[in-house]
Image 1 (cartoon, one colour):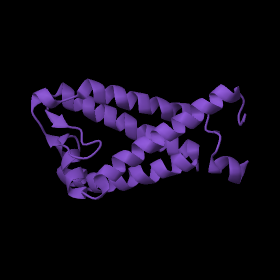
Image 2 (image 1 turned 60 degrees about the vertical axis):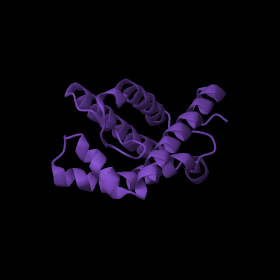
Image 3 (image 1 turned 60 degrees about the horizontal axis):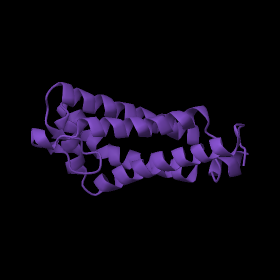
Image 4 (image 1 turned 180 degrees about the horizontal axis):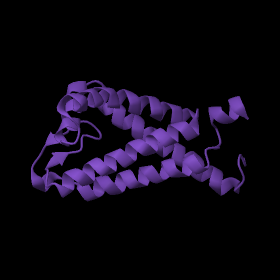
Amino acid sequence: MNLQGGGRRADFIGLLARLILGVVLIWAGAAKVTSPAVSARAVRAFQILPYDFAGYVGYALPIVEVLIGLLLVVGLFTRASAVLGGLMMVAFIIGIGSAWARGLSIDCGCFGGGGTIAASQTQYPWEILRDVGVAACAGWLVVRPGTPYSLDHRLFG
């Protein structure tokens, strides 16, 4: 399957990028969607957004993550979904980096939980590397959104 030039390897990379980004977003959102107050607490722990606004973001974030993840897994509106997913990853990287630089000891809450933790429990370098890798998947899909086994390909050719 060669949807946009580049051959089978590029198609495989695109499919893999789409599934990685989509599954990570679904997993992250699903881990938080049943506990929106905990998600709001995690967003507030970053101390970046105004308190009330951070709460709204925390309540909405899991739903947005799941929706964008589902669009990516099925391959519908892939480029737009990848842009949104990539922007979310960049925001997460900035948030984690900011917390680290300011000496906050928090659990990012990426996959549930969140809030203040002991300094020895922080995993900022790993969290940033993980999100950079996932953001790279989004970047690939923004440049080359055509992937095998996608609804985009079936519906729009």
